[in-house]
Length: 450
Image 1 (cartoon, rainbow, N blue to C red):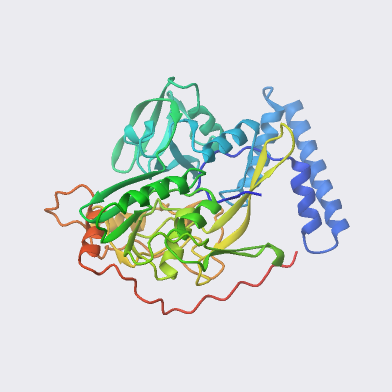
Image 2: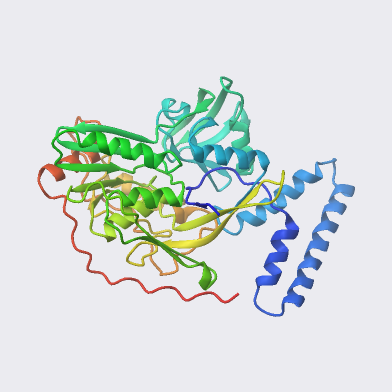
């Protein structure tokens, strides 16, 4: 089955109640038959509540929608990334990973009843409209979506190609404003490449079925002239396919472990090694990350850091250290996206909630002491650990609190991309050499007995 490392995105809906609850009853500790009997009692209670609500509620309501909402709430209580995909959503997900789909080109998640932007995809309607990571979307075509299930909000953002849509955006320290967009077929440019003098620059925007081939073409283009180093830009990359992250890492290391996954059972544990496809055996590499770098992007950054193959620069990444498996539910029933394992970097470290801390901390914008104070007092921060029901880090690692960055643009800075400028400067100065990893590998967590 395909393993997914998508960052928080794509709406949730429902999953067959009998399948999910029965599986829970069979695999829970204790007497299986007693647990199963208790589960059936709970399902009978649920059916009775639905019937009484339908008979006595002040107005008639759609029973199917009510059941969807109930099951959706159950799945959302597990973690932010487990969800049901109805047949239409399942088809859209398959199209998304194939590299072409319809929509606005925006990755979103749910937070405190709001739809929150993880990142807009380069070159898409959302990107061109100026929507930013951390924005909250509160209304579509003037109708509030606050409190609406994420899946329903996402469906409203979809529509016919060339159709218009208006989205109300709430941004910190800015009055709410409306953004007009036109839906279109999204063909994200998954890899971008250019030369900055004798330094190659490659930006990977997502990890789908097109990423590896596009990356290979980009890397070949950088080899046409003198090459002093390479900047691999994973900023605002929300993730994607596990297989793609392994293939991408393989372009920069010569074999060895990329990532390991550990699930509920011993048989679920697996180590993934790089394929022998090293393109840059001796070229210094700087990897750029930020708070929008999630999942598969963090696997690549974590592997290159632990393998002492690249210097990680930027600010702490999103912190999504879990893997989702897509489980088809049968003809015309859609699929279930379920968190089935955690992943660990080659040193055995979990980055769940804590994120990947850069070797060289560089902020993209200049922050004042007041900005830092505001970040410290804000109730919800932009990271995996801030999401409702996020998995805990099983090794006790915590995300560092907001602080004054070690490096940030000086007041007189007139450039367009300070982090990229600093990455290029590090390579030009001959300092893009990772420090040896001195910390011992973290112990493997004890398996959970079903």
